[in-house]
Length: 169
Image (cartoon, rainbow, N blue to C red; front, side, top):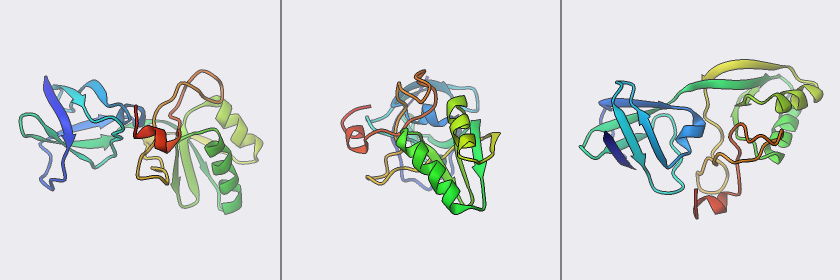
């Protein structure tokens, strides 16, 4: 098994690729497979959140590129910036990881959140796409998966207190 224990700032083209969902990119310890099929173990420092485009240094010296894998998301698009801001506010109030783009936002598929957004008067579409949510205002941490959600079943990635992130996963 290929062991990966660190990020690298190397600009060398990766020789291997690792495609992970946002939830898995928030894990510090993970047994997974590279796109080539080779088994890999991630043993990263606590608090590490991987982003698409990151490069990792494998124990054998190979550079492994990280891809944001497509996943089930909900997308809200509107030319009304205030309506989108209102949705973003309510999602943030529920600690939901949100990807923001001009005129659109995305978040992990969750039927309770979908109903909430529809109740705010906007249309929600289901999409299958890479997910790169906002990293937060406190030092670039992207948040982590949490055991609570709007429906109480722990589905979907949630943003939590960023200062606690540095102290543990």
